[in-house]
Amino acid sequence: MDQFHHVSTAFLEFDKNYQEVIKDITKRMGEGMAKFLCKEVETLDDYNEYCHYAAGLCGLGLSNLFYASRREDLAPESLSISMGLFLQKISIIRDYLEDINEVPKCRMFWPRQIWSKYVNKLEDFKYEENSVKAVQYLNEMVTNALSHAEDCLTYMSNLRDPVIFHFCAIPQIINMGNLTMYYNNIEVFKGVVEMRRGLCAKVIGQTRTMADVYRAFFDFCRILESKVDHNDPNATITLKRLEAISKTCRDSGTLNQRKSCIFSRQRNYYIQVLITFLFIILAIPYTSTKIP
Image (cartoon, rainbow, N blue to C red; front, side):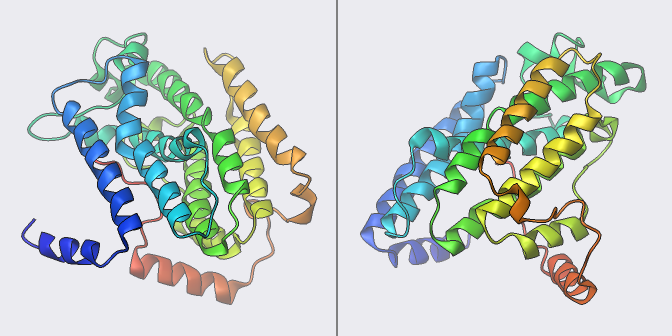
């Protein structure tokens, strides 16, 4: 806050149309986040509302900025919000251990309405004797996040500007990959699980068009499908959502135009090493960060 005058100075240099968007979204996000300072995430509606304030409005604000720049048409509000919700929910899944161990008091965003079906206390998921229930609940959270993927694909397919497209597509693909890693993975309750940086660098370097996005989402769906345990309580709905995402990718008619970024063994090692090196050194924050 001591350096906030730099933020204010930069803000005042923007055109009025950008300022209006930023002021409106910031005000609405602040009011929403303040509401959850004293309110726990109890129900699924609470969970969606919190994610809306924390990131859904951010997605909406970005769409309005893209439109104000005259580089994009104004995206439907529901699709813009889904872009933020998808990233936010994946971030919340990732940060279970960090949030549950928060000092002086934990701040959890996993909805009680769902986790109470498996354990009496949310911290019980940390203990080995609850591993089966922990994974089942984790899979339900992953399945919930998948409900936004089709909207994200629709949103990105309507983008025209290459820079804006790249800006939007990279975090969506990387987080879809992270979601694939979280599913059925007890390690989520023991530490941070994320897609390896080499593969992140590969995604960054090879994502150019919407065909690349469809190919990546389709490949991650294949991986996720292979991990689904048919005895899992949510297996049916998980597979249904994966099939819907895969169908959207197939219906695009572009899958045969692109080799798999995820499964391909052919690599330009010099470019690969360079991109990975820059990614590590610069620590580019392409993954979503949850607002505290």
